[in-house]
Every structure is written in C-alpha cells, then in structure tokens.
Picture (cartoon, rainbow, N blue to C red):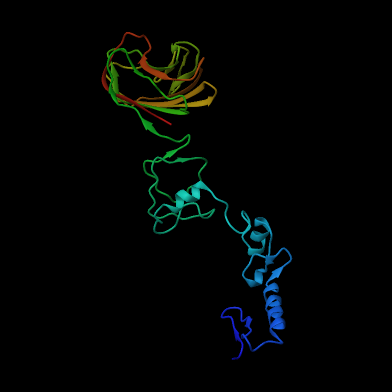
Length: 278
C-alpha cells in the first residue's frame, strides 16, 4: 500500500512494509516540517499561530496588544460603564465641544461656564445660585433675615409698599456671628438737592412720611473680604424719589441683616419685605 499523510500538517505516514529503505528519510522530513514552525526556544512562530515570544510582554507587543498603547488597561469605571444601558443620542463628554439636546441635568454644579443661547431651569452654578427668602409682612420696629449662607456675594432687599407709624427713615443694618452692627456705616442718601449722610445704617430714603408707602429695591454687594457696598433707589407714593449708596466693613462673614426705622421706635404698619441672595 502507498504512504498516507496526516490530515492537518500533511506529514508523511510511511506504510508498514512499503518503505523499508525510505521510512527514515520520511520521518526526518516530518521532523523538519514540525521544527520549521518554531524558532529557538522553542517558540511557536507568530505566522504559524503562535506569539513569536518567550515572555508575556513580548507576546503582547508582537500581537499588537500592548496595555495602555494598543488596548485600554483595566479600569473600574469602564466596568461600571459597561454595565449601563447605552443612551439614545449623544453621550455627554465624548468630545470637547458638544450640542446637547433633551438632556436632564439634576442638581449640576457648573464652574466657569460659557453658555450661549441656552435656557437653564433649576440648575446650580457655582457662585451663581439665586435663592429667595420668605416674604414677610412689615410689622414691629424691625424685620430680620438670618441664616444667610457664608458663600453669598450679593443680596437684593425688596421693600414693597412699606410704611411706618412715624416719620423716621428706614434703614438696613448688617450683621455677622456677633450680631447686628449699628455703627461704622459710611454713605449718603439724596433727594433733589438734599443730602443726608448716615453712619448707623444704610438710610434708604430722605425724609420719610407716615402717610406714604414706599417701594425700595436695595442691592448689597460683597466688595472683598467682609466689606459690603450698598446701592438703592426709593420711590415714595407721593412721587418723591431718593437714591443713595454706602459701604460697611463687618468684623466677620455676613450672616444676617435687619430692616428697621432709624429711631428704633416707629413701627412698620404696611407692606412686605423679602430678600434674594446669590
């Protein structure tokens, strides 16, 4: 019978009794064929299905699987991401510049944003949170707003239709952890050619009248550490308008403010007062 060959490598299988003089040569040829699959080591050649390397690092290089160059190293965040259901549309963060459509950001903190043509609802931007206080009816000799956060940089005080029992001017006083401060204010209020300087608080009008109501928006701005600037305009119901500005340096971080009458005895009897801060 004639010789046969192996199925996969085609090595010669000498037939018993038929290769008495050549079986050795045939066997040697088979060995050479097998040996050609390897380099010294022995290391199975890359072209023959091996790695062509004797170490794991060299094998990854030969196979184009260098960690950190050809393939991503293991990262627990990637494992977490792999377990998520892919969203429809754009994945946030895949490019430096993106247009996001129908994305919901829940309580985000955005630092130094540049936003053009956007509508933002109920978002939180660092240093830009606009918080409204609780409007209160103006009554008693003063109205206090306390627990103002330490990060606040600007406060808007709104007096709407406020009047008092006497003719003492309205004023705002600032306070910190040590309480309301009643001295150290510098500034003035003007009405036409009349000027009134103040030192015990930011006086909000020139010559209050008991029978009139007043609308007064006041802006308090933190200039630098614990130093506050005040600006305001007040409109009296008899058409008299006053305006003014002033500064006040606190001994600590502002935590509270008071709206009161300058003499401390006249009482508020109408209107509402509220603040907004950011």
